[in-house]
Image (tube, rainbow, N blue to C red; front, side, top):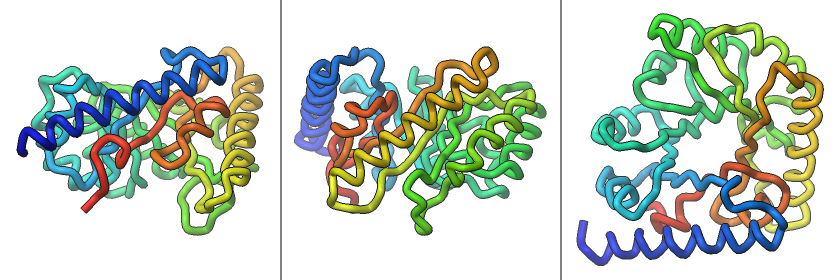
Length: 235
């Protein structure tokens, strides 16, 4: 990687962090309550190293095979590794070594497999439950109507800790539609938290990407998944 690209990543991270903090303050939120997950998918390991050197600590990968090739190189670095892609059942066995937070749990069959694999590894899986808040047939995620029942069953599994929810905004240029979806997701998250108060920790809410993170901040997101804003266009 040339020095220009390294500097570009550093500059983009600084600019993005400052933008997030500014939007948070205007929304009367603390910037400390919002974490940027730098999405490094389809980027080489050198980009992750440049990001670490720039101060990034949270990284997201969406393909298990790509994560297998890249993430072990950073096992001695103090980073938090997020799984942000759909988890296939036959790839669950790789999760304990690769990721610190699984953001995309949306099936009880997968939940039981995760629970079993992590028990074998004497570990607890930290997860977010993915909800298809916009009912988009092209996206993964639970039907919002069954999210509460899903959480109730999930809480019976001893080697899974549910830390909240994740959603992907609707595929539209309408910022009003995006805001509407994020408002619904925040309300659902709050309602379920109240229902399971004492059993469910104060939920994280992962929503918002490079093109809609400002709305996500305004509507209560605690995790932002941002790739292009930091690493540039994917090849």
